[in-house]
Length: 518
Image (tube, rainbow, N blue to C red; front, side, top):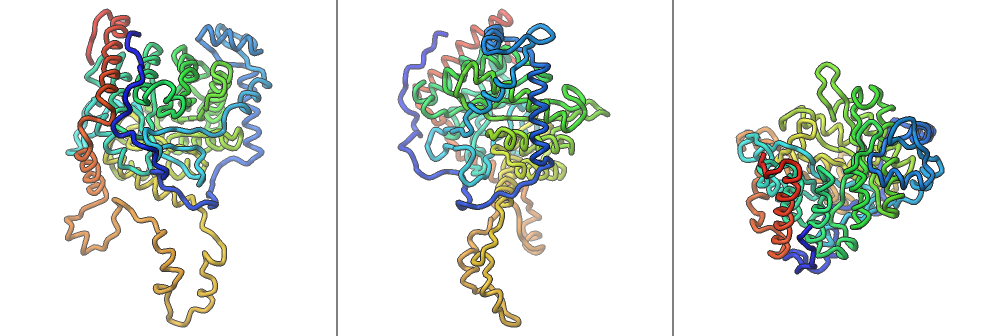
């Protein structure tokens, strides 16, 4: 690649470190409420089944060098070409050695995220991969483009439950370099952490170099990883060349990995909730072992993204009951079974619009996953089974996330929290409005940003204005206030543009012999 990463001037908005976190924190020492389908014994039983899959049957590895490295580490050939079986000792060694905490850095220190969080809560991220965009101005639908990427960043920058932003698939640029254009636009429009999603192996180096430019250089990127990268299995139990290449490059650049499994129950996985959990865990553990061999010491975030086929239509569903149960089980298995940082969809809907169904499905999903103990709740703003993004939905999801973050905070039962002494002395007909305890604690109540709390008279006077109207206004205000020029220096922008132009010539030419635009 001809473009180089010479350490450029720091971005205009990257100032001196700010000691305060930009994300809401709960008080130290609180207990986190949990709910899960699995007992501790069942977690251990499922762990053993995962080891059975990897050790007795194995996975297919299509990257020749990785295959050789596995054999050198003690793996054995499987029953068919490219398949290897992992020794149980190697699996346990890798899972024990993998870091149990990770720093996801921002361009400003106040946007850094250390996971697991000190308050035992979660962070949220925006939806990724969507090809469609719902315009917040008039709810019209169009294909995702670079303007939409800028608007997604502008809105997500204002959402205090959203810790990081994922780049979507964009149209209007060469198809095979869409990820490079989308990522380059996004990383220049937000001070928050950015999730990288390569679409083919040739693009990985370009994406990593863009991240280094935005960070101020490769050394700065390693010291403060402002990006993390997804690596996916190809269910069932196969690892493509590209995703193995991602693991190698992440190790070279010091980029945390989201090891992602996307089983589809009834399709690429058995039509069984526990089998889905086993399949996803086997693939995630397999990728973690691969990272241990190819990029030792790199942080790996377990990312089971669960889908179920609607057997009547063949459509994939992320918010049906079976997918919710599988997500809960998978997070329990990864957190309690191996103690790793865990990430899954914590928002999203199978309906194409910001409607009543959408709010009901995503509220159930958020609660199910948060109570399971997930560190990252993905899918903010996504609709139609993760294929469409709506900024208005993203604002509403932020509100649900704030409520859920508070909901999992188990209320204290100590005498002071109960206001016990005053309760035991309250006079007949008395009240607690002027209680010192009420005055001291009233500001701890969670106040909504866009959800409505008003009586009928005020509601009618407002023209029946709803939470959707408030969310739409918040999204449009964020878009209007965002700077047009982005957040990076002019030099950084030029280097990123040069890399994208280089990719358009060389990668597109390699695939089609000419530059074509979708």
